[in-house]
Amino acid sequence: KTDKPAEAKSLLNKSNSQNKIVKSISKANGNSERAQPLFQAPPGCESLFDEEGNLAPDLQALGLDPKLVESVSHEIMENQPKVTWDDICGLDFQKERIKECVVWPLLRPDIFTGLRNPPKGVLLFGPPGTGKTLIAKGTFSHLSIITDNSLHISLTQFFNNKKKAIANQAGRKFFAISASSLTSRWFGEAEKLVKTLFAVARHFEPAIIFIDEIGLAFYSLLSQRKEGDFEASRRLKTEFLVQMDGAQTQKESRILVIGATNRPQELDEAARRRLVRKLYVPLQKKRKCWMHIVHKYVYSPDRNGRLQMLRMLLKKSKHEISESEMETVVSLTDGYSAADIETLVIEAAMGPLRSVSNIAVLKKKKKMLSVKRYKSFSFFCSFEFFQTVSSDEVRSIIMEDFEKSLTNIKPSVSEKELVAYVEWNAKYGSSAL
Ligand SMILES: Nc1ncnc2c1ncn2[C@@H]1O[C@H](COP(=O)(O)OP(=O)(O)OP(=O)(O)O)[C@@H](O)[C@H]1O
Ligand SMILES: [Mg+2]
Image 1 (cartoon, helix red, strand yellow):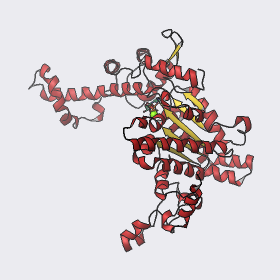
Image 2 (spheres, helix red, strand yellow):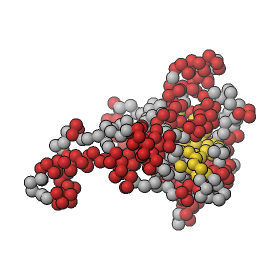
Image 3 (cartoon, helix red, strand yellow):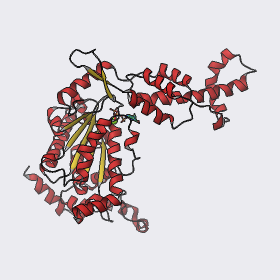
């Protein structure tokens, strides 16, 4: 611990090039470099570097590696596609909770103080394909839309009358970092990366750090064979816990960590404790079931959620599915996750295309082939004919396509697995659904 400040000092005393990101590049390129700007920070991250590529003074003082800072700045969710709350079907309870413990406190820190202090860590857990990543993206989009809104900023100005707070509101940044970039790209330096991540987040405060597949990031690596890997992974986890504690103890700090996982059982108690609010993202809603003696409920996509998803997805294509047929599909998809429903609809949407190529093949080959042979032949011929088909010739999606699709696409999560999530939720979860 004692040599850490010394290390930072010596870093500062070293030549300025240590804090520069492009010096070596511009030198290597010689004179031709002159016409171009020396350094271009990623959009929205200009305040991290000056135009020569030097780190901002507050980051310099921490002795951070400029390359890592740049790498982190590329993870910022600036240019991601926007996900609105309406794009997330069902999950009303989860959306409300997220607004309550993430969105509101970040927007109105003056109200969320004292006992209402927001949690510094939130965990989204649940079976694969239920919308955890989608909820995190929705949260980011929602916050950036609100903060882009000048009306909101002027209202805040009115209420708070604090210039600094307003500057913060406008300069809000959100981060998303995936397990793969933490562990594989920077594996040897993952510990340093975590430190950099939190430092940059503090620079932009208030900020959200989103770690997808959090279990994977910290724990599956423990099973790596090499001794060195085990050490690196342990150090990464320790650094993460230390940084989270740092964010927790500074009362003013407005950094929130959102983790998502479909393997909550792999989190140990240290990580569990820091991710205070644990929100179950189930297969949409509860369904009464007596199959398990202890737990009376398993979670299954509720009818409304599935119907909502079907409507939303079918809007994107020409179809002739009536409301009552949609109801039929809904009743046949009990136990399907949202991602399964998506796959099902995509598969059904392929139906008309397949029949287009069939028709085309049939048209051309009718004289040469018997109907029996055409079936096996169609695969080889279809692309050629496909190019000649106009988009009007593609028929609408019909119920028959769904019938075929239902025979191919099955639920990806078993009831047994669902029970494990329900048990974990009953033990540690924050929502007593
Ligand atoms: N509630 C939902 N409403 C609309 N679409 C959804 C919903 N849940 C999932 N999807 C769709 O399913 C796909 C997978 O969702 P997402 O990536 O959020 O799942 P996840 O819970 O993060 O899964 P994993 O645990 O495997 O990471 C996305 O493409 C998304 O469009
Ligand atoms: Mg995910």
